[in-house]
Image (cartoon, rainbow, N blue to C red; front, side, top):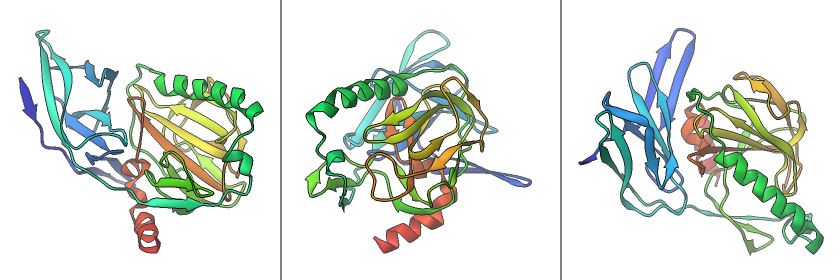
Length: 283
């Protein structure tokens, strides 16, 4: 049986002294979808494009969190899920189109745009590490009450079609927050460090796994204060802002991964809506 479900736009729960901001469902390429589950669904059986899906909860409901790639096509998409009788069901949702702007950047270190031949073995090795980190799956139920990782100005948003020194490269995979070098970086949520180190393009970088494929990534750091295997609390300092890797200045590159797919971090950080508006007005 196939059903088309209406999607919640933004769920916010007010708690004395705290605002619990649920992720914002935005079914566009690079966005996320929140599909409400009923008590008959076996959540851990849900798959989208053969990838397992995380389940996030507010105080009333459970939702499948579906990350949509930037290459997602507009139209009706389906996921498969089993009910408690063992029968498979198809749940459907619609994806609408979105066009992302282009961004042109000048990188002074030309080697970071056109690597030397001797750099390629390192780059390919690091690509494998990144892929493994994105595929990591912890069965712990994820929390999605994200806190802002660093106080600063939004300098670049997710999805921009990028040109480095007038050469086309992959779209921007995260949110850039500009801040002075040495500014502390806080973990957006509790989790486990599954990868950390110095990467050719990303500089000093940390992967923090929040459970069930929901992962936050912090790049271009000056210092890293954690190591693989560390259990991290929300708001804990994991390092400092830097300008390592391929950059034009000091900033934090924050990426969010769901079902092995990078998605728009602003959908998890409605607290930054005012700063996002400022960015859009000036760009």
